[in-house]
Length: 536
Image (cartoon, rainbow, N blue to C red; front, side, top):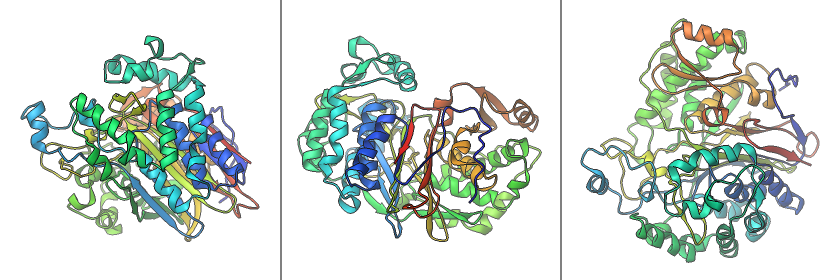
């Protein structure tokens, strides 16, 4: 693939070329990963160290109570890891109806009754045990140091931190952990999280066992019990992440790989399967035809995943049926190039996530994503160990259907890592954060690279749109006004948004240029966050 490295979009970032590289949405995360590579570790070691640091440096988006997913190339083949958590044993539809009324439709958005078993720490341990080179304790060293000594808050994270305070300030443990001096830290102020340092030391010493079957597990269960939650030490002890085979779809001579359900990665595969029926490259890259076509393909994808995708055992159809070429061709025929349509998709709540990727000169590449779901997750923070708990339980339904809550079941998940191959060989590890923006970002950036030859950094910086529901579309303020007007003329209900962090996600990309020991990689980091792509 030959890229045009002339970037036509406003950006604060340049592509990074290196043989070993880490790209994250906070510079300290990337530097932690590089430390592991310098010590003789591999890309998995780098990704885990970066992920641990990110729980501290971007706590709006993730924490020690997160879930995670990964796709990695080990040098010979792809592997997928699902480290999303399950519902506590007490969770049934009657549990929620009894607490919140007979008409309740979903578990609450915040509080302990939105928390499923956190999977991220178990995911770190599983990745390290199977693929890591360095001792697990070494991987926690940068995070422990940052938690203990603190770091100065960057501007983008600070804005989101302050914005979350009015809603979450009264949640159990939140103010104690995240409102030093009785308010959110300001940009450039030192934030220390000594409670998290205690947890990270135990995680390091026990390879995560203390989190699920030791002191931290007991503290989480005790905290939940004190504040009306149902999660128990037995729920934590029963948890194990799952190794899975990624699902895939071909596009323009390449193959896009995603984690299978209970996640929404299949939406990106459906969308590119529909786009494959059109001559996208024959349309101007930032023109209305290309953008309209991609929007309509994405709507069709969401219409299906919101109806069918859930824990695999609860799905009415298989991913293979949803990705069938004949079926996608029939869906493609529904697109009217002159008119926006409502294909009946639902809406997913906007949220906060971190994505990172790492690659080493021996060819290992890791695509890793970790999230508390909505900003600061449940808002609940176990104070002794600084465990900021996700709110993934809000993804369940109380009503009958594929996503109806049940003991030990995993909810519909929004976080999705992506990986691209060609002829069975690795090409790119990448991801775009932001709730239902994620498959939309996977598709939009991939089209820019494969159909239009834009470099990963340019594809990352280009203006994005975001489908919400019905005919509603958000577009970034930097999108060509003529394109926005023409999309409106075709019936899209357009809202131009200035807040790129919240609505349009942020990506990290590593593209393999050839033999990693010789040509290495080119990496990109999204200017919508405080991130960094760094290498050597």
